[in-house]
Image (tube, rainbow, N blue to C red; front, side):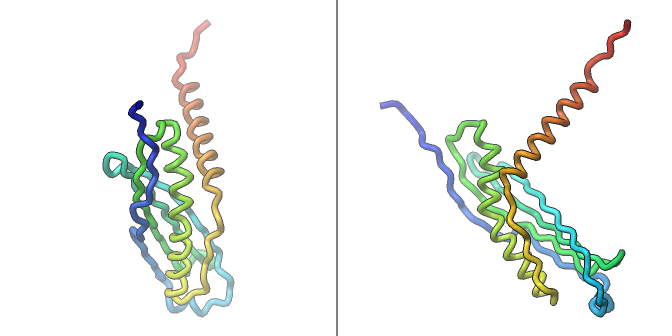
Length: 159
């Protein structure tokens, strides 16, 4: 019998890695009647923490402003530890960039909404994210960057 190793994908733990809430202009800004502008940024980071063990963290930054004054600034990092073994190397990046974030993201959404409400504001609900499209967009941007740097590095020919 051949010595085959089955692929392993297991969630070890999902946890809140960090959370912060700042309201630098309170209480005066709370009296404003103007609706704030909301800017939401997401960042996905994956790293190996041991042989076959990976941490995937998603950071959401929610910055609300009225004109140039901050109403509140929230940053939440939700992470998961995953055991991933015996996968072909070409499958690792999609697993870390698509499958793992899809598991972690619902926890992040809940923690952001909860923190905003605990800060005394109406909840901010992060919309659903298509991590596959996000991953493909990042891969295309990296490929375009690599192509651009190759074009810059090619020696110019003199005629």
